[in-house]
Length: 240
Image: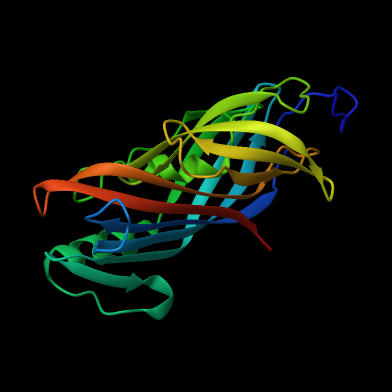
């Protein structure tokens, strides 16, 4: 049994007034062939966020989330965009400009979240993007839903990660302890070819420190009317 606290349970342990910051990054590359040699499109979505715990109860927490930076890059045959709020770019016209304007507006707001002691988000806003996706679903990627019980090496549980129009069912398996952090093998359910990624949790607080994984999937490409092979990399990490 991996023991880190007196009650041995893997839970979120946060304090009122505590603020933490995270970076969320999704990198995608689309190819027309299974060998991944003929590129069709590529993109990057990155957002940095701060989370401030406003209330702590026996059941869980209430938190304010603010976006600190938005970056969105797309290159494909139909349209392109390269927006980064840190550059204070002028917003262009067209479809790319609509997405940039939408993302810029998100930086002005504070979003309310509620979650349990196991990290399950029970209340959050819904923010619809111009292309019909719920952007706010990705704000809770930093909260891995924890088992709420003691864990052993080899124990597994499921979680979901969302970036705009990309959803991943994740299987976490306890691999051991590295530099005081709980190391989890991280597999995308349904992907039997990509090697497992790695996720690291602070066992004392239950907070995600870093998660990184890659996956390859076959998806229908509306631009070409054919299937595309999409290589995706996800990196979520705690910021200083």
